[in-house]
Length: 139
Image (tube, rainbow, N blue to C red; front, side, top):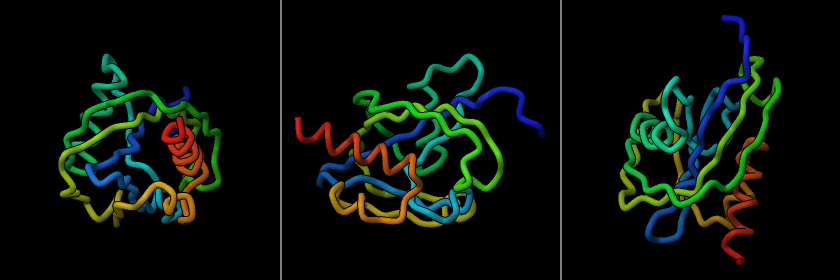
């Protein structure tokens, strides 16, 4: 289907009680590590979409803390097909570490210390979210 407008999406940088963050591997993002996320549906708020998408994508209940950043991806070569996205990326927390992935859209996951995450092979948009999170932690 031909894209007519930019797609609005939400992403979650999820931290657990041990201070680690969740990254997932996605074939859609050149098999790189990325933050989990998904599309906002018509009539849905960003936070409602984020909570729903985290249940669907990784099986986690989350608490939304704050908006970390927003980014625009216009036909990124890292994505498997040409798309124009508006990303709204949030800092979130979870009490649960039992991640459930479907093996197709998300093929693997890792809980990792934020400082170490910046050294992984991530897509450039997730790398920026991690960088923004590290700045937030320094405040």
